[in-house]
Image 1 (cartoon, rainbow, N blue to C red):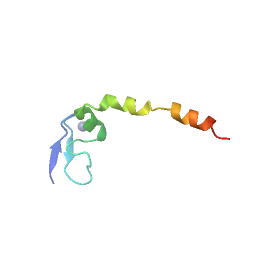
Image 2 (tube, helix red, strand yellow):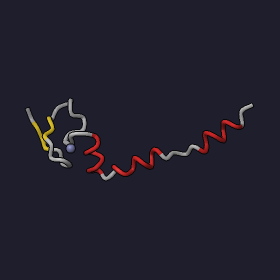
Image 3 (cartoon, rainbow, N blue to C red):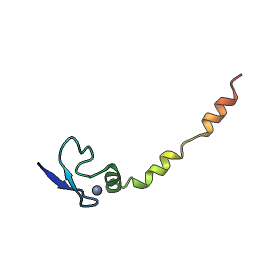
Image 4 (tube, helix red, strand yellow):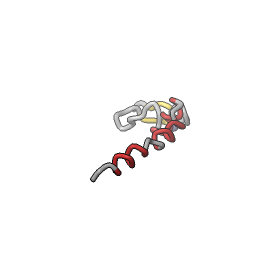
Length: 59
Ligand SMILES: [Zn+2]
């Protein structure tokens, strides 16, 4: 069995299809390494204004 160490937290990760984020141990560690960890906030802050304006034109 092949194992690698997660580049972010050094945890042992089994190199197999069961570890979809290899060589990282988790999606969290993958995002940290890619520098996208903080970008999740931007995705949540979508444009809700469009939804509300289109709703008021019905009828
Ligand atoms: Zn990790």
